[in-house]
Length: 326
Image (cartoon, rainbow, N blue to C red; front, side, top):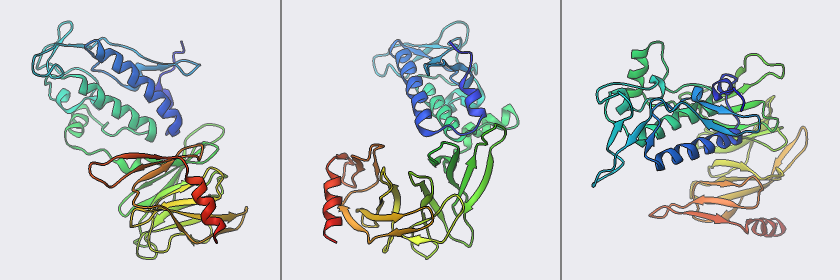
């Protein structure tokens, strides 16, 4: 078992989404196993999570664990301490405490779920949502501060070295590049200013183009520019758009219309030129969506009540039919 903890991984900067999710899945499984046995960790943090060279994740140090005591009405809300801690004693690490834990109140498995969310945030952003200069300020942040979700990453370049994210008010698009030889990451604003908002950046599979949403022309539109050295703007949507997504081979660009339709535009690009064909409706009355990494399926959240997730598997034939009809 390696002695490396995910603290060391976080110190190097934001973790690519696939890597972060692989780590998070194993942490969640370990917590679930403990909760099934009635145990609450109470001190989950990066320093207590180790990774072996084969990628196996271990959650360690259950020294502050609590045992959940069943109750007739709600077995998740009653807990007593193992050892000598008691109600009114604050235990744990401040930056990862749930609000009730920071107030020295009784805790249950939800405190671990909170800490898990903080750890996942740090993996994805390389920053702590609550840590401050002093213990008192950190506890105050846990109790009063909303995490800055705008720092969450949107995409990585194919080589895994540059993170693309959004932040600010109005929103702007930034990059964080990890140098090949190590050292500090280079942070740079890519798009922003002039009173316009820029968000939802996604890099093309070849790493040469970036699609994003902006209000440069007034209404939110999906546009594309060369990347990482920006070129002229190519507007892909006409009547507004959001949530751009590239196909696996980069030959189609999908986006969501203001009427919640998944639209598709066939694109032609080279190392220096980019052309987008007219956008066509692919899926009607859809909603927020994503394309799976293999490019074979859509996952769609409908706007119906109650909300439902749909998996669409035959979309490629629809795209082919639309292109052939042109």
